[in-house]
Image 1 (cartoon, rainbow, N blue to C red):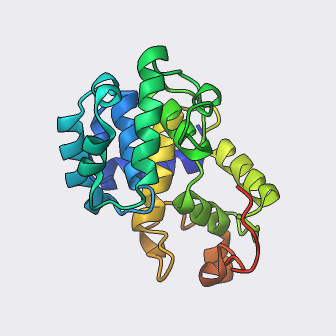
Image 2 (tube, rainbow, N blue to C red; image 1 turned 90 degrees about the vertical axis):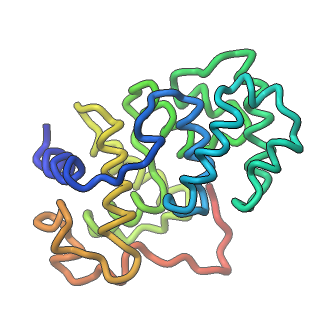
Image 3 (cartoon, one colour; image 1 turned 60 degrees about the vertical axis):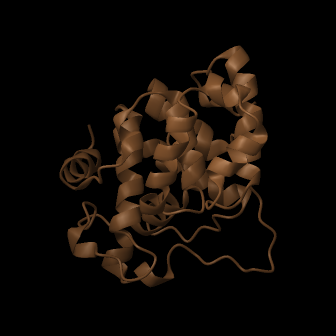
Length: 225
């Protein structure tokens, strides 16, 4: 195992937050949590997640529920297209069962590259690196990469960097730890560099460029995801 991986996992074992979706390997529960966490902070998601799982404990129960009931349980989270998509996907998954690879999961509505990789890694142990906003920020600073992360080219380069982080080891704890660093240490503003497991290797810290990385997207440019 690489030294960076060891340092990251050691830090994570001591500093990881106690979040309910980290206590399960159930792909359904992991999927629901990942969809809820889009555009919403983890602390705010917890009560919604617990109520939703209590109401719809399995993908089968969700698939058979009325969309009105699903939307009611989603109330307060916003971005209601997410709730409609998980209901549609649940109906398909109830028939097919959960695929175990992110490549297959991408075929289902609402499963983008991040969500598919997260479920495949956390539930099934597939060697798949996730790339969300937190990981983009950590990798951009750690490697000192001034990449246009909103373009296909930039995203692919960052995905390659993320893939390197999970080489020859279990991807799930590495992915969780990378996101945790981004959420709690490598913050958009005023990162806590002295507490970071990557402080010795971080290019941005050495160069003093934390505030300029990752690059900020020009609002006039079109996103390519």
